[in-house]
Image 1: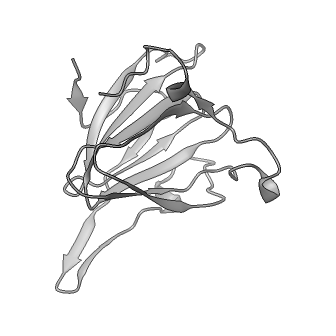
Image 2: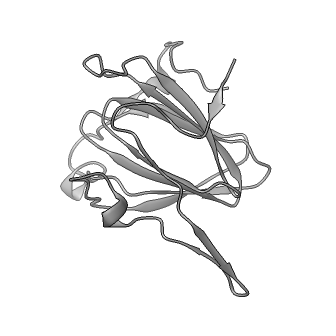
Length: 160
């Protein structure tokens, strides 16, 4: 059984609910503000991805990288987080949060927190990420900092 919450009690996970400014021209959302980020968090790159309806990305985690994901539409997403850090006070905790078109949410996800998301809507959805490490290192000359659980037979990290 999945329990969907609006908050997440995992150490180091920061959740923002940015305001959507709407007028006759459309809308605007401030996805990232350094004065609203965790102390010391500084993105070094950013990207936007499109996820088709029904598609799951993850679960995976990073050894060193902190992610800054924003789910802002044009579909609905279900986000899954699991604390996989044995030395964390919240080790073993998980949370599931819905976001997207009507509930814009941004997450700072520290290393060792397994994360995944699924487009649960009926249209393509956009996701923004601004991690604090370059994918593949400088010049993409290093292996990616990822532990991909979707490639393992591990029933702790189930996306349904």
